[in-house]
Image 1 (cartoon, one colour):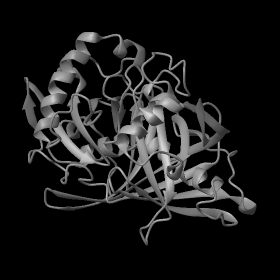
Image 2 (cartoon, rainbow, N blue to C red):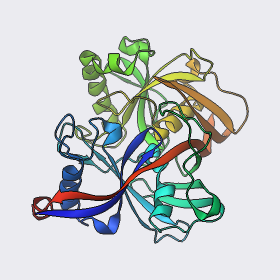
Image 3 (spheres, one colour):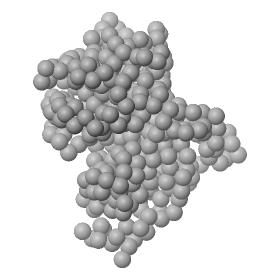
Length: 361
């Protein structure tokens, strides 16, 4: 027997996946994980028996519900389902999938649409972050077509503006969770930073690469991944995250001097594969790192003067721009908010069939 679960399937930014109603899924994590693994086909390189697309950016899941918080309209609970393994990680959040939360919440009737544009106030359940999404809704309907282009997605679409608040220390409790601007791990200088996403940021050259390689070339470099993972495990321990062997956080950012007029060139690792473009949360953390005096990326970057700073980060297929509202008091840095413009598109809606065994164990 199989059990149907309703879903909307959206591309959010440069990721895609099913957007479920949280009430349609099991409450306990163990059963929920089995259901998501079955729905996405985790444990096979092609995810051939589920909705996944054989890459970490296509095995992401959003679970939505009306928020009990006075300031929020919708709760967004994120799950990163593995590709090759039958595993689910609930520790991170995803800013690209977040791009589809506003449209999906309106499509599902969780948030009523206004005429013109609709402001959707979102609570990220995984991290507690607060985000406002501004969705184009002329005539009270979500508009998906438009003139906004983002690198990594073909064509153009309607813009979705994301404004992030409370991004600092959302997981680790501090912007610099190790207490230092730089740590040395296995001879590598790293900056451990928690702004929107806990990250370990190092210079690409210190790992023996240029930082301009393609995603495919990086994914084929098994020696690079082995060395990065050893450093990441220790960075996770120092950041207070414990044993991160089975967790995708902290993510890895390798930076180099810009080549195409941006502030910095970066490669973002998820962490066991290179991101084809750049994660929204990762972009915020990397942008913030350029503002931290003495960080591993500060001297490489070319950050515009004044706040908010519009910081362009070069990635494998183009660039992403982050607007950072910040203030300084001497060397002390305060990140007030970060904003990005992304796009989203509803691809399908219906029911995914999940074997009954996933529910019963």
